[in-house]
Amino acid sequence: MNYSSRVYADFAAAAPMWPRVQHAWQGACKNFGNPSSLHQFGRESKELLNLARQKIARLLECHPHELIFTSGATESTNLALLGIIRAQLRKPHVITLAIEHPAVLAPLQHEAKAKRITLTILPVTTHGQVKLATLKSALKPTTRLVSIMAANNEIGTLQPIRQVAGVLKTYQKQTGQKIWLHTDASQFAAWHQFTVDQLGIDLLTLSGPKIGAGSGIGLLYHKHETPLEPLFYGGGQQTGLRSGTENVMGAIRIQIALQETWQRLPKIKKKIRIYRDKIADELVNFFPNSIRNDQPEGLPNLLSLTFPSLDAEQIVYLLDQAGIAVSTGSACSQTDPKHAGMNLRTIGREYDDIYSTIRISLGWTTTQRDTQKIIHAFKIALQVSQAQSGLTRRVTRTGKIIARNYAFSAQ
Image 1 (cartoon, helix red, strand yellow):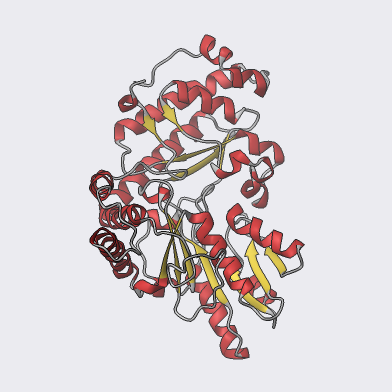
Image 2 (tube, one colour; image 1 turned 180 degrees about the horizontal axis):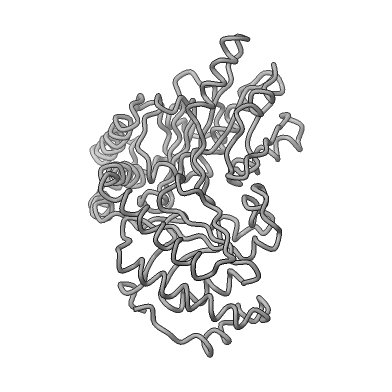
């Protein structure tokens, strides 16, 4: 298959690795020494690791020791949440949103079921945003942790993290009670440059794959003096909070990817928003019954569209055959059906809409020609899906119907 002719529009699942990241990664492969070793091989790896940490710290305007390299965003988030919970002497109260990623909801619900925390899951507006008044009313003397994502991975909603931090600081001034704030900035960091002080958070999750660093690497920022207990124990690396030999090559990848992403934002952000809105306008006009789930002022690259009565999986397969890669929603929800469409249900969509919704997420490789290809292929896919709307999902999965009835090129 000629991948150069294909159009990738699933950046919210994973972004292509930046060329600079690929080049640096290949070079770093020569530095295989354990960074804890005293010999030259180890010292060279340690130097590269420390340099990557320092460069990220300069971007986020934090101390290098406040950064922990992990295997990915899920580990970072679990370390943040469970680390805070385990550090508490008394059973804490935790607040989060119904629209959060499973990496937040699953561990918190597990802790609540085990009666180690009391958990409040707040509803959101029809646009997917937290209601600050509802958050204020949910705070109580035992509240110790609030976790709210900076940008939603399925509908692109931006949360007012700075205002949330303000609510918690006001409460602290009034009561003397510290409440730690965690945000998952995995999607947010791909399209917004920030410092930790600008957000006002205590803990922050970053994902390597979402910013073009490749898989197997994530990052957790934890503000100095934030109480954390490790998830597992071993050699005591990374100030004892994340034991295990550090992923030096991963650290280099995420450092360069974050730098590349933020350096290029001024050039591509406006362009990508125009491309996204062009696709939205064309498809909504072509299919008048469609529903746009994302907000125009949300993530500039993400478009979520519901096509009532049509099979989203079938459309994804049809588009894939035409060389267009999109998804039906969060990649994480594909492996666990109970998470599928959770965000759509939370903002009030009908149950059937879950299976008729497609997420398009653009990125730095997207061109104007790609945009036209997406529109062209989508229109044909919608027509084919309408004609075959009686087919079962199982038949669609075989690909036989698609192969027989859907032979076209999006060139």
